[in-house]
Image (cartoon, rainbow, N blue to C red; front, side):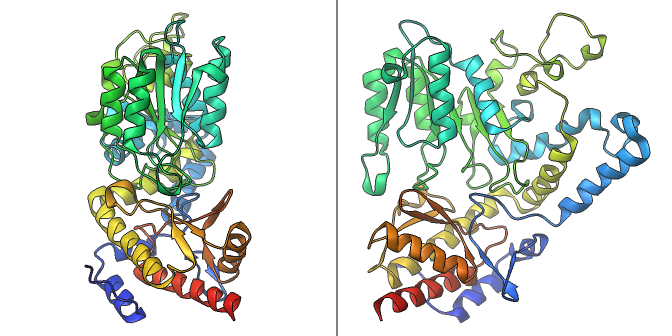
Amino acid sequence: MTDFECSHTWAEAQDAADPLRAFRDEFHIPPHDGRDALYFCGNSLGLQPKGVAAALQAELDDWSNLAVEAHFRGRSPWMHYHEYVRDTMAEVVGAMPHEVVAMNSLGVNLHLMMVSFYRPTAERPAILMEAGAFPTDRYALESQVRFHGFDPARDLIELHPDGPGGTLSMQAIEQAIAEHGHRVALILLPGIQYRTGQVFDLARIVSLGHAAGCAVGFDLAHAVGNLPLTLHDDGPDFAVWCTYKYLNAGPGAVAGAFVHERHARADVPRFAGWWGHDKTTRFQMGPTFVPTPGADGWQLSNPPIMALAPLRASLDVFHRAGMTALSSKSRRLTAYLDWLIRSRLDDVLDIVTPNDPAQRAAQLSIRVRAGRDAGRALFEHLERHGVIGDWREPDVIRLSPTPLYNRYADCFGAVEIIEAWRRSVTA
């Protein structure tokens, strides 16, 4: 049983009582026909925090007024700029500050991490991954297998969905590790499956993988900023993520990486760069690479200031809101959208994302029962009426009520617009 109601009045009352309601005003909401659009696409690109413009302008002003001296005399000296996002990033992912670093893009960081943690041998050449993974992961993993002289047809082991709607059970993961673990060098799985929105049990996967002698890493693109994470305690060897989705750092924003502290001072193979060198001796310009302890030691180049400034502004919002409060609202907001769809649209829509709150976060993936063409028609109807979600082939519409800026009234309004589409196609 729930206390949910199908009414604008009820939804607006929930929004009025929401302790996080003021954070919506800290974001630019796209307009549609003179009102705010109903934006459910934080899973693809988060909205712009209003603080980003000032954050960028401050760095532009320092560049203009100080030029190279802004590295040392700026309001936020550029020499240390990546460190300004370290503590808040660690809060969001449940890590020690020295275990995280903001750098590069997700795909680049994934390759850098595999240089260190995919160390195949003739006896252990394989990578265990999900079938239907996001293309970045599939391409990167296949190319790494080939680079090391192995055959992806044999040594890229893919876990195929065995659950409702294309989901993957924990039992299937356990069985695959039991069967193949002896020849697996690396397990690489997502925190949240991008198409279905399914959340995986990271701690359990790490435990099983390490017990089988495998390195374990995660792509957390759809998990970071979306659900509480405990990377340090869960213990993966590494994780990578982007920051332009739920972390709202802007299109193509600088990404993040986690390296567990047990590797902080280890002699781990890596591709080295100047900015990864121990910062106490970096400017001695010596020929021998001495890595900075922790995740910073995987940096290649000096920090991209104009890319980090928006991330810094957004992480400040997360710090003030707190992941615990955001997660609490997210669970209830997503449950409300789920309940509305099941209560009012069960005859036309299926929800792919697991109904179990432990296996989902903000994202709901839906399919139109009438098939792909009808799904595309609904998606285009939503766009015309100011409901912004996204489409993933072959037939999934993703709607993600994000707790920092989405409201209960947004969920109710979106369902009303879907109901209008249903009436139009059945009239």
